[in-house]
Amino acid sequence: MEILNNNFAENLKFVIASINTADFVTMDTEFSGLSVGFEDQTNGFDQAEDRYQKLKHNCSRMNAFQIGICTFKWDPAHSCYSERPFNVYVFPHSEILGNSTLQFKASNIRFLMKHNFDFNKLFASGVNYQRLSDKQRVYDKVQQQTDLAIVNAGSTQVNYNPHRSFTSIGNTSQKSLDHYLRKVANFVELAKRSDEWLSIDFTIESYALRRKLSENLQFLYKDRNLIYTQFSSNSTTFTVRKWKSNNSAADQKKQQQEVKLSPDQIDESAFDKILKGDRDGLTVIHEDDKCVAFYDKSPVAKSHFIVLAKTIEFTSL
Image (cartoon, rainbow, N blue to C red; front, side, top):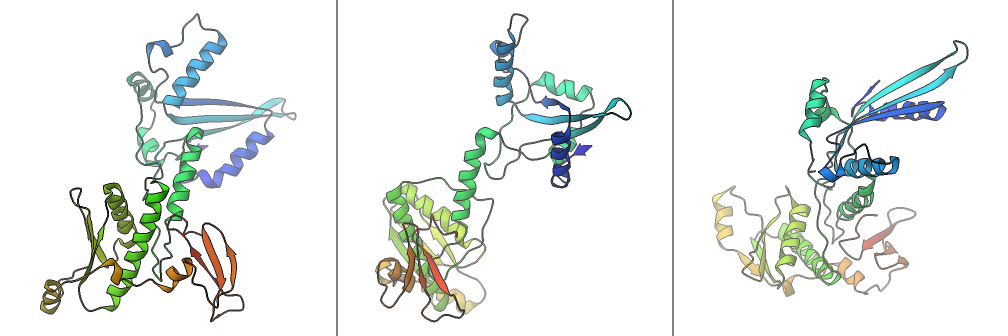
């Protein structure tokens, strides 16, 4: 049975059941290469352990292309073994860890071509996989992207983009980033209600923080035609402007009369005040370092409560 990306899920249980009920199992693999350098090549003087360690080292640096599994179960009625072969094409193409760099050995590629290996099928339909050593990296990336999926700043919510990833920053910079993101979220709400073309300047000393803020805002407001940003490595000024359209002459005239706001003119939202401790009349039911939950003052359901994330880093529930 040939296992590809499009039938892997439906056949996985059958493969596992065949392995679990088999009397014995054989396995074979095809790799992009088997030796990296001269010292990694096996030779006749190797002990079994030496050969195993060399092959293990080489396999950890090369990539598996095909896994062959065959299960055998004794058939007493015919006094022979019945077999179930599975041929699995595998190819790493993670959208979480980014574009992978693969190593090939010319001799291995020629060997596979000589034996009619289907590279088109491998690249187009190979089952996606990651090494076990990358398990924690994959988990951390998925968790990071999930945490950035919904930003609970005021009433602003965004769609999750599974192809976007971000690098980490320090705790102090993260707090500053959260502050600026909430300021921008409040600016967006103000700009949506205003007929004027507004802009706001932030003074941010760190270029890394300016770049991180720009990345997050692109992620949060991409394709929404609400704001755009401007900054450079030579200036501490980070500018956020209301999205400019070219719909009419009147709009163009308004855009020429841009109204510049200062950060102090952007009022805190009710949610920002709650996060800072202004909770008169609220019944808090849970609070930790990541979020605060409280009952809604005007419930529309029998059990109606609100959960606010304390930082942009922890916004997915």
